[in-house]
Amino acid sequence: MYKYAIVKNLPMTIDDEEVYWFLCKSIHGGLSQVFHQYNIKGLTHINKLKYNPEENNVSAYDLDYIITHILDLDFNSLYPSAFCGIYNKNNPYTGGKMYMAGRVTKHIKIREANDQDYRDTKRKEMMNIINSKDRFSEEKGQLFIASVRGHIDKNHINEHINFPPIWRKRTYKTDEKTIDYCHFIIDDVEEIVLFTKHTAFKSFVEVMAEKRQQAMKEGNQAKQLQFKNIVNSSYGADGQNNEKFDKIGIYNKQQTYLKQLNKGFTNTRKICDDRYLVSINPDSFSAHKCLQESIFTQDNSKFWYLCFIYFFLYKCIDMDRVHFCCMDTDSMYLAISGSTIEGYKQQFKHVIKDQEFWDNHFKEWLPWEGCSIAEEKKLLGCAIESQRESIICLTPKCYSAIDGEVDDVIRMKGVNEKNSGLTRDDYINCIENNSNVSVPVTQIQLKNGVMSMVKITKSALTGVVDKMIVIDSDISKGQSYPCAPQIFSVDASSYHYV
Image (cartoon, rainbow, N blue to C red; front, top):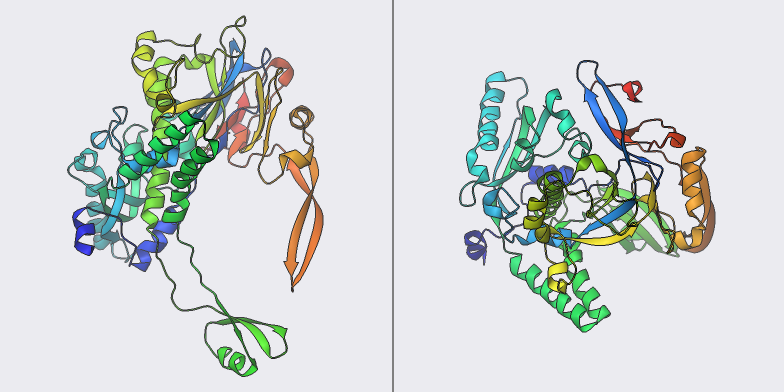
């Protein structure tokens, strides 16, 4: 089996502790961001950001277009799509496939900080790997994760400033998918891990997707949810390791005394006569999951998200009539200025700038009227999740999508929407009146064997965004409270409306 895994480049568990901790630091989670907080039909203008390198400031400016509707796009099974390795012609790299990492083949790290010759040699070796043209090849090259320091040239910041999720972390992993298109310049590199690559999960994802689509055709809701959960849960079940540092056992008094002499002893608690809970922190722990699969699933999903934006929307949609409201791991809300007559269920119909490109490529990404379930739910594709009139986006995972004909969609991470009593007015007041909204939350706690119900007051709506700079706005003028990315050496006071 070991030889078979090597021949097929299958993933293997990590047996190097340095590599293990390096991979743990590289797991950052999905993208979640707010770009414009206040998006009201017939009132709010389409807004854009611009960085001025000469004055070193960021300005927000409104266009003449006013929002007519909100479009919610959702990627179909994004994580399974990211690790299945199927071919898609919209992927310009590695033969149109997103590969997953197999076993570790090499680990390079600069260890002697004071030896300049050593550092230069190692840095040159790592930069040769990163800059190698083989990394674009389907046959040659290996996948890698690198710890680098770098920057995007100021002359290219405006190309990405209106959709900047790649700037979420100032220190982040990078590969061929971000270096070239985003003009990322590497200043220094400290560590790199190389892997073989594979597409071994392809058949699993395709079979589960086919079974789910068949269940949807049959109208079997339970069955289609079962297959959906199987592929979606495989990311967490197979890719993330839960280290158990503490070993807890029940012992009598004499055994407890001996356990307390252990150098890893951390705590003791008496539970009854002559019985004690003893916690010991062992010298080692089990790492039985392939963490590299988790990292490359996240990386591939973010890459594919950006492919949809840069290689499809930007090429055929008039982005002067569209701005991003908010985004999550596999979804995005777009504010669109289309026809003022047709209503809010017009999607992209009136904002297409290149009709020929749209006609040739939109079926590769989006569903269309009369398409089959397989075409609507295709892997690496998108679906129209909902269409609304307006949306208030306070913070990531906290928004209220407004529609005059149906019930509002209210989302608030950490708070039960049904029991909170929050309404659209609470979200609007949070913006218009700069008010905070608190809600009562009931929690069940178990302490010393006693279960208690505790009621606390929790801040539900604050409008505080800590990942971006929120530019002060005047909503009476149709301004949208745009959220701009943090740029190195640009002070918060240098962000303003014009």
